[in-house]
Image (tube, rainbow, N blue to C red; front, side):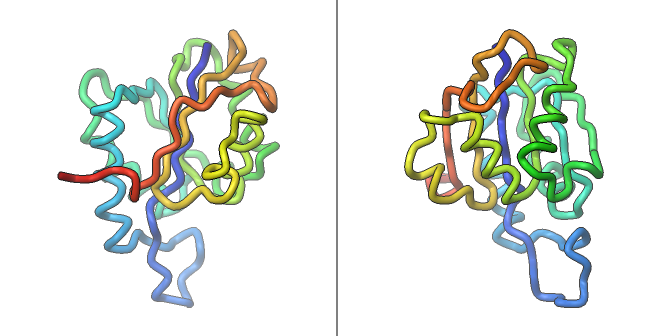
Length: 172
């Protein structure tokens, strides 16, 4: 069964109101959280074979800070314009286009509200109160999808493996 790791980009900087949303960089808090979360993921068995990343600056920077934490074979990384502020329906459609050759574990790095909606939609009744309430920056939700292939994933088909926020881990 496929495993999907949904990762919301790390905290972005909003100091320049004239900067286009797509071009916002990470804040100092985000630059700390992304590698800390990646180290935690690597230590806890997260090993995506494919990483789909929105082309927004903050998502690209998030992945750049995360990628070094993963040992073993480097995942294939695909940057996609269509993931920028994608809706739950657009995200589901993209995931259903994956082939089984893309791997059993895929990580999606993008934005709210789409990622939050995707996690809650896939988890269905398995979504706990913490996930339903909020999907903060640099949070990870991993789901085992109750389908034999990516093309068959459906709302409510996910079983949450983990929902981890930066506040949940310690660097120490």
